[in-house]
Image 1: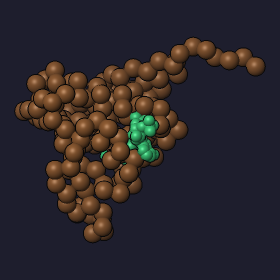
Image 2: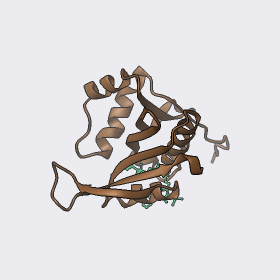
Image 3: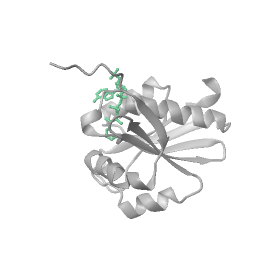
Length: 158
Ligand SMILES: CC(C)(COP(=O)(O)OP(=O)(O)OC[C@H]1O[C@@H](n2cnc3c(N)ncnc32)[C@H](O)[C@@H]1OP(=O)(O)O)[C@@H](O)C(=O)NCCC(=O)NCCS
């Protein structure tokens, strides 16, 4: 049997217009209330918004994406998802490392985000990157037990 010994190569880079369908496919398979393509396009047009993707260079396929804002001295992470077939391969970690580096370069002091208390996978990922809970609140549109935890990581301690 032929074995492909080429190392897999992944790039973290800004999302392109041609990636809309691939990012929407990840969004739809990752969230119960996915954003619409129109919202994604609007987000791409905002000066303060960043949407980065992890691209599998060999297949030219998007395997993960993140959407974050940089406002004043804060990075706020709005969205992070990996294609279900590409999870546990370090892609979300790649994106988080990139976001943290971008925030440090832009002299930001914090990265903040909101995550469901029940989302064990994401909670574990963020804690590995030094995020700690700073507050929690119920989400508005879901049952009372769906609590969002606000996590923050300080960039001046990295
Ligand atoms: C959470 C999510 C983004 C993780 O993406 P990923 O590319 O699989 O993450 P990584 O491979 O970088 O995982 C890094 C670490 O996070 C933790 N982790 C990730 N997925 C996990 C899971 N299913 N169960 C437990 N821990 C998990 C582990 O510590 C993992 O390290 P390990 O594989 O060495 O044990 C992905 O599961 C996802 O897209 N979920 C749906 C969308 C979502 O909930 N996004 C977060 C919104 S706040």
